[in-house]
Image 1 (tube, helix red, strand yellow):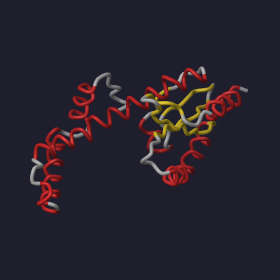
Image 2: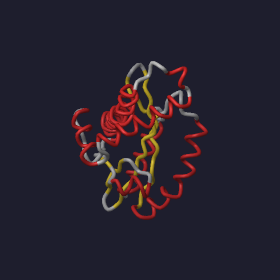
Image 3: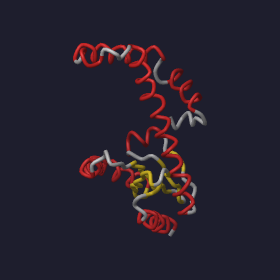
Image 4: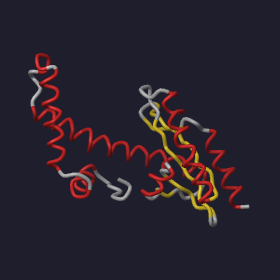
Length: 182
C-alpha cells in the first residue's frame, strides 16, 4: 500500500487489482467463504447470499486495508512529525519485512525506526508484548545496520480521532535524534 500511496479508495482498489490480487481472486475467496458458511451452519444462514459473501470479502480486503493505511499516515504525519520536528519517511517494503519498521527518520548517516501499533479494546496487552518480543531481534539488527533504535508508537481513537497513546515516546525519539546528531 505504501508503494501505491493512494489518495482515494478507488485508487487503492485499482492498484490492488492490478498489482496484488485480481478481482476474480477476491470473488473466489467470497465463494469459498460462502461454501464454508452454508455447509457448516446452513440452517442459520439461509438468508446469506453468495453476493453478500463476495461483498464482505471486498470490504475486508480493500476497504479495511485502506482505512488502516490512512489511519497510520494520519497518526504519523498528522501528529508525530509535528511534535518531533523532523521529516518522517515511509520505510521501504524490505525494511518492513526484515526489521519490522513502518517509518524512519534519517539523521546524518544513521536512521531511527518507527513501528506504528494501533490499539483498541479488541487487542490484548499480552498480544502486543508477545509481538514486541518476537520483533526484538529484528529491531536489534536494525540498530546494528543503521545506528538508531526502533520506537513503538501506539495509537487509538479518542472521541473519533486517532491519537498517540504513549506520549513519552515523543521525548524518547527526540533524545535518540540528539544522540545521532552528536
